[in-house]
Structures are given as structure tokens and as C-alpha cells.
Amino acid sequence: NAGVTQTPKFRVLKTGQSMTLLCAQDMNHEYMYWYRQDPGMGLRLIHYSVGEGTTAKGEVPDGYNVSRLKKQNFLLGLESAAPSQTSVYFCASTDRVDTEAFFGQGTRLTVV
Amino acid sequence: EDQVTQSPEALRLQEGESSSLNCSYTVSGLRGLFWYRQDPGKGPEFLFTLYSAGEEKEKERLKATLTKKESFLHITAPKPEDSATYLCASFTNAGKSTFGDGTTLTVKP
Image (cartoon, rainbow over all chains, first blue to last red; front, side, top):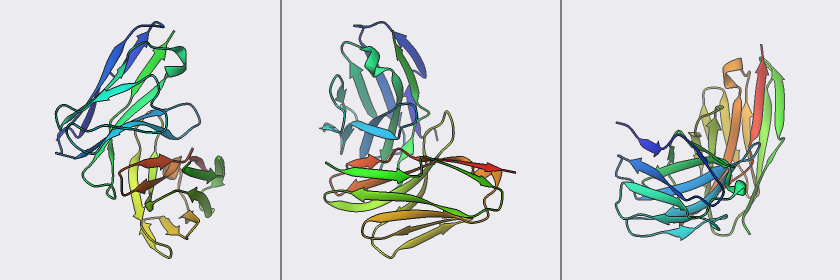
């Protein structure tokens, strides 16, 4: 049972480049989340999904887009990367809003 | 705007020295609070869910409590392996969660 898997684990982008981060979960969870974590700070919610085909904005959605075409996958896209998007990105999933969320191992993204 | 504030930012304890971490919140439509533990370079790991004022949950040396405005994570006789960042997060019925910035705990042997 892999749980929540994020791809890639590390990436360096040049300003203006685009990329997609993939989050895959094998627990049949309804809810999925994308967070970013900057040094010394907690997690800030970027976008989330309450089920297949749905997405919603979190605290810091600007510059990011998401899609949930399949229940098990939640994609985070950066159309034109900026240095301010340098961060560690975490994906999480849960089957109900009040149960524990399972987190991936994180993606460390550097934009130069 | 929903806010979750944790204090202190950092806490250094000697092994065996008990203390408490604080999480205060202002959240519209609050359903409950989570506590997570995060080790360096890893994603958070779930500790507790609290739903209503007066509720308490315990796990080994940790006990979480909840009032109408804040939550406490009490650490009794900590060990070096308890060193980590502790995060609290609010959640709503709509599925939205808001994390605090965390308290980094260091326990010296």
C-alpha cells in the first residue's frame, strides 16, 4: 500500500517555465489537497478537491491551476513559474473532512 | 479570514521537563482541530482530532485539549525522540483546512 505518492521529488525550473506536479493516492479517498510550505512556516492551502471532477481555491491559489479528472490523481500546474513559487509542495488525501489526512513525501521546487 | 496562531515558535526542553504548546484560532464554520507532528524533510503525521470544547485526547506522552478559543498540546516528561515540529490545523465542514506555523520542539538529553 503506497499511500500518497508525489512526482517528482525535486525539480529546478527557470523563471517562466511550466510544469505539473502529480499526486496519486491508492486509498480511494474523496478529498485531496495541495499545500506549500516555506521555511519556518506551516502549510498553506493552494487548492483542494472534495471529489472527482471538483476543485476549489485555498488560501494562496494565484499562479497555480489544478485538475482532478480521476479520483486517485490530483495535478498541480504552474503555467509560468516565478521565484516566489520556490517552496516545498505537499499533497494530502483523506476520506472525510474530520479524519486524518495522509501526506506525500513532498516535492522540493526551486525556481531560478 | 480564518486564522490559526501557534506559540511559542520554538521550545527547548530538557528531557523530562514537561510543557505545553498553544494553538489559538479564529475560524468561520469550525468543525474541529487537528494536531500533526512533522519531522524534518517529511510530511506531517496525524496525532489527534478534537471536535468540541472540553474534549481531551491522549497518546503516550502527549495530551491535546480544546477550549472555545484555543487548543493545547501538553507534553509530559518528553524524550529526545519527541523533538519535531508540531502543527495544529482547523477544518470546516466544507473540507477546507488552515494550518498554523507550528512550534519546533527540541528536547535535549
